[in-house]
Structure formats: C-alpha cells, structure tokens
Image 1 (tube, rainbow, N blue to C red):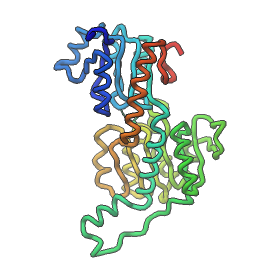
Image 2: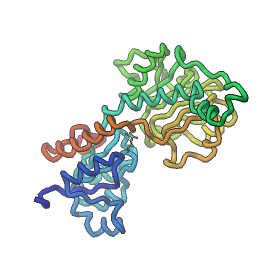
Image 3: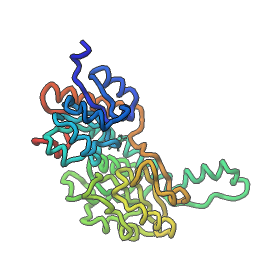
Image 4: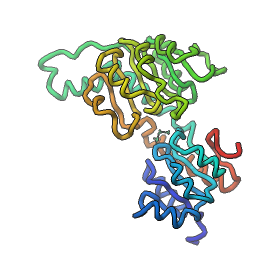
Length: 321
Ligand code: 8YV
C-alpha cells in the first residue's frame, strides 16, 4: 500500500514535530530541506509532486514553485501567507490552504503578555531581581495598563480578539484598517498616524506583505509619543525596525513588546542592548493547544482538497476563487 499514499513535497520541518509524523503517515513525504542537494532534487523530481506543505514562517519561494510544474495544492501551517510567493502560485494555478481562526486567542494573549510586560517592566524586573539589585535599590515606577487607550492596527480576527481582551482591562479601543469593519463597535480612525496619536498602546495585528511594509515608520512612532508603547505580534516587516531602534534609544517612545522581526531569527543587535523593549522569538501561536489545532487544520485542508478539490480554509487570492 506504500505507493497508494499521495506524494507530498514538504518544504521543511514543521513547527510541530507531531505534524511531521502525521504527514508522513498519510502521505509519501519528501522533505526538501533534508535533501543533500535540494535544487538537484527539485530538478530531478519536481514534476512528480502535485501536493506541497509548508508553514507561514518557511513560506514557499518562486524558485520552488517554478520547479513544481504539476503543483496543484499547497497546505500552509499558519495564518500569514506573505512568505508564499503569490505570483508564481497564481501562474501555476495552484490552490493554497492556510490555518486562520484557530490561533486568534493565543496570539491575542501574547499581545497582552507583551503589553503588560512592556508597561510594567516585568522582564526587566526579573533581570533586576536575579542580578541581586533588589538589595541595593528600588525598581523604578512604571506605566499603568488598565484603563488606558489601546489602538489596534488591523481589525481582523486577531485584532478583534485583542479588542475583547482590552475590555477586561477597561481600556478604550480604537482601530485602523484599510476600511472600517461594519460589525465593530470600536472607534475607527482613518489613518495610522491618527491612531498612533490617539493611542497609549499601539498594537499591530495587520497582515504582512507589500501593502503594509514599513507602515509603522519614524513619523508614526513620533505620533505614538514618549509615553506610548508599541506591540507587534503580526509581522516584523510592518515596522521600520531601524526607526524603532532609534525611537527607543532616544526615548521618543516609552517602550515596545515584539514577537516578530524584520529578519528572523536575527533582531537588530541594537535591540538587544535596550531595556525598554521586550523581545520574544515569534511564539505568539506557540502553545501545545494552538499548534495542534493549526496542525489539524493543515491536515484537514489536504484531506478536503483531495476529496473535493477545495481546502477548508483557502487564502483569499488562491487560484480560481
Ligand atoms: C506561526 C505565524 O507560528 O501563523 C502565522 O502566520 O506567524 C505563526 O503563527 C509560524 O509562522 C509558523 O510557521
């Protein structure tokens, strides 16, 4: 029965080891990154694959799509699809599945973890205690979070989950989005600059990609101002990281909490020197429960594509929509 399993090109190892096992059980999997010479493997075997699997972090570059002339479906583990090469996938006519909806809670939790940490200096205070500084001095006073204004850039599923968390902290909520969200009860501000000026905390939950590249720039950070705190759980590309470093160094904003960076896993070295920023290694969806739910949807998308020709969750620009 070995050969009855559909062939699947997996771009690399998945962010959940069990998913590698699950995929290998259901499919005749070849992991491209584990081939001694991936380019040669693609040249020799690329035409044998109709199915591929990847993650939001790994993405799928044009170089790989172009080497898979019969590619029909890609199942991607993650909600972001900015690293999947849209042009080559559209040209190929391949459909693309992804995993929205199942990670909103954990990503919103992480936004609040970073927000509270950046406001109250939790990570910094941990370093303070471990260094033995408590016996020598008092930890400085920090910023209150509850009751403050939270500005959400990107009012999609994750943004609105952040807004729900904010109500538990008695915060005022406003947002900016390409267009107002009809069902949203919150204040819509028509520009990111206005949102930043209005906010005590500016939380980024907008999708990455060309449309949002560096939208959070020096001007937006100055609008957020010296009491303001920036939180990013979306994509590093949305923020001009060099401008952020300067704003933090010059204390033109009060602080930041970042789960994502322009060049992962390499945050700008200057960030590592600053105490007014909390850094996390892109772990917002990184709980056992959520990663399992993402894995299940990745598998379900493959199964459903094979059964019906359409996955359960398909990226908005996926072929023939
Ligand atoms: C993933 C993410 O953990 O879903 C996304 O778009 O960025 C994260 O949830 C990561 O990209 C897994 O590949």
